[in-house]
Image 1 (tube, helix red, strand yellow):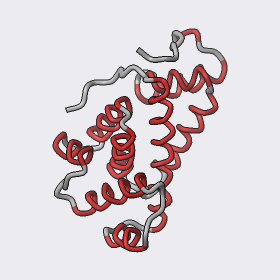
Image 2: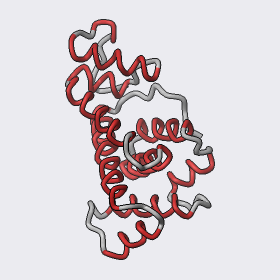
Image 3: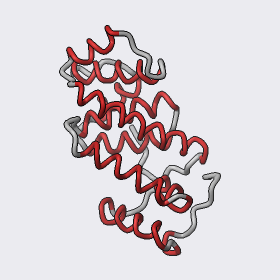
Image 4: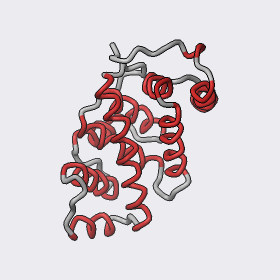
Length: 178
């Protein structure tokens, strides 16, 4: 059970109600993570969604974005976010074995994706301190400098939700992952 009680969404008013309405329109319902953040700080939820909008407008593919967020979530040990980003990854076309390999840090059979997984794992474990060879490797895999900005932003967004969900022990309201 979540540590922060989520009020009935129907009782939301003002900024929280507006953000919930946007989420419901986009995905059909408000996941527990968003409900908890939104009831406490609607502006934080809105900012997080705006950052996801920046990522969506960028050049990093949805599969790459979900790969980054899944690696960050696995590294953080956030069950809620692992479930969410596995589901979202599947919706982008990543199959169940590939998602398992990403979570485990195993080779997926896609050299570009494998380079991204290695890079993000190293980025998270080193707290952003990378040597030139690691940056050269991700560039050699086909990622541009602009995409390095987008990878950094995806790490930041995932770190926020991972941290909050770990604090809250947010109850998972999503289908289980394979």
